Amino acid sequence: MRRRFRRTALDASQPHAHPGASQGGAPRSRARPPVNGTTAALPSTPIAPHEPPPSVRGQRIPGVERIAVLRAGGLGDLVFALPALHALRQAYPHASVTLLCAPAHVALLGGRPGPWDEMVVVPPFPGVRDVPGEVAPQAEVERFFEAMRARRFDLAVQMHGGGRHSNPFVLRLGARVTLGCRTPDAEALDLWMPHVYLHSEALRWQELVALVGAEPRGLAPSLAVTSADRRAALEATGPPRPFEVTLHPGAGSPRRRWRAERFAALGDRLVEAGATVYIVGAEAERELTAEVLSQMRRPAVDLGGRLSLPALLGLFDRVALHVGNDSGPAHLARSVARRTLALFWGPNLLTAGPIGPADRHRAVLAWDLACSECGRRLVESECSHESTLLDEIEVERVAAEAFDLLASPADARVALGPSGTPRALRGW
Image (cartoon, rainbow, N blue to C red; front, side, top):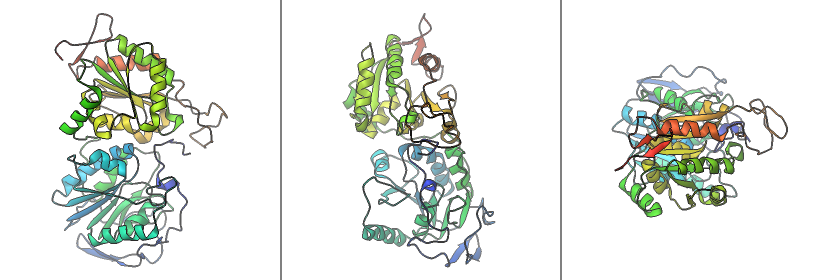
């Protein structure tokens, strides 16, 4: 387990081949096509680790009509890349953008406007799209790459990770120009920058696309919410209530989960303040959402396993606040919800941040750096235990931040009552 305790491990953490190996792709001895009017031959030996990238950087690539972007990780990983995708679209407004992604991304983005023209699901591929217990037949993988090469991409962008596996993957697409990050042991692309692990993901991908002239347009992720999303949410919850809050007690790693009894205590305080509380979670989190509900003293609605991704987005769009662990739903909520409060193990905010603006989106951090079972400092090494790292986050801290957010003038739907806690405004 990586110290970040992420929703998915970046491919830089996977076993790797020698940096010069093609892993079945086209050999790197081919000539590089013209870039900004220059032609250069690729070196016959692998580029030294962290050698400065080529001099052609910061300029738009001429003649770009077809772009492929590889981002096949988790939902949160996709959200981190959204600002960079928007910047890429604005830099190349007439190019067709193909997002090479995971099935969950298609379920979320299908029919939704955004900085992409189509989505293509990547077959299971080691270090790029790992599916437990599933290995794509070699013939299927070859058919995928043949189909991608037939599209004759002008630019292929690796927004997936450090490149140990994803850079060879991108090279097999056969694009005229390739762009991506690179760890010291990863194969170089035509244009690249070093992959530094402890760095904001949102900043990383904007810095990357800036190498091909895509100017940063802000760090806040944004997803369009459709009428279909809102209808799906209504079908799951019934008519909106005056003051609604969502809680998500799940996370991909137990290390990143706040205890169920603390979510229950927070839920009780919100209900006492007049909120309708929805406990949300994926199908695999049904037991967890049920546990939170069972420990609450006040009524709430358990939606564990009952929401499609569009319905979840539609619900986030209408609630006054979302509170959840560092996970895909928290990052999705930040792209559409009025207010979010995320519970983080402190070091993880280095990669998942920044969070803001502070009147709408905040994080509560735990700074216990040692495993409670073995005492190992987890910013320096790893251990096999799975006990939560969020125990130092008390309910009082989270409730105080939640009520402070709800009192923010950023949204007039909620006001403070005489006791200093939110009350629903009439007529909402």
